[in-house]
Length: 333
Image 1: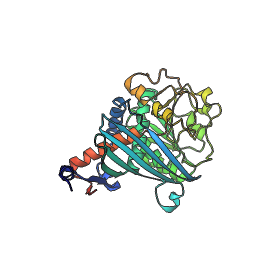
Image 2: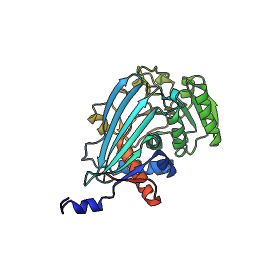
Image 3: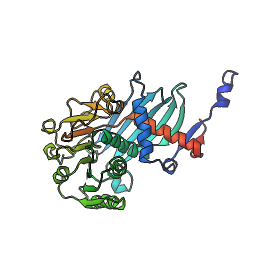
Image 4: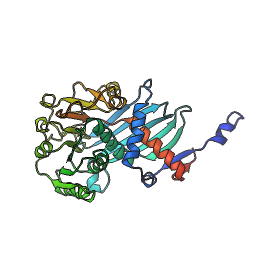
């Protein structure tokens, strides 16, 4: 070892590893996540061409994806590696697994590795909630959920936190048991709850409709856009795969996404139900560049593929809170 190498080695704090248990033990709330992501979006470094994604499709039910970004304001870079297998439900395993690596923006050295499954689930719901704050009709009282898996539960919690008028939850799923489980969760939270048998009836009677259909190639859309009631907001956690593409633009007054610049850098996303023009993104709405909802009768859609910047913001929050509480494991490089 040379003299020039010694100081770096002595001062190197190593890598922080956060397991899924460590991450969940922090007890981060929907408001915590919403605040971290909102601040990151408002203050993001526009000179960095981030938000990049690479996907490897194994077959119709399995894929891998990497998502990366960096931000000089947050002082970090991020890469998230995701694996998806639809058959994991039969194995007693989650469909999505993820690992996140954070690196220092100045030195480019990795500083933390953490399980990304909880972060992926709940940062996605936080993005839904940020959109709902700008796009949901004031006084929205009914939430409809299409597809009642893990994302349905996280979105219920996140949206309940930003819809003060919410009174009733309607649930539809191919599995009656999963719809009943979501309805039971809503009842436990103090809401009225109903399991619906017809997805279009749910869409036609809900002020906010969240679709969370699984990511399986060739899955059949279950709702026509004309079923959406005037003044409603549709949130496509599933990229809008629940909605029939034909006639979508004829019955929806405005389309929004999470990050327009990143969407363009990635060459678009063919999985998004809407392939036309988008009216704005989260930065435009949070910065005031776009007013969001402009009338109580507009039918609006927020269709989003997920922002790596959101992963970065939440992972940074996890790392900070972990340091404050002494959680996680220090690993040697």
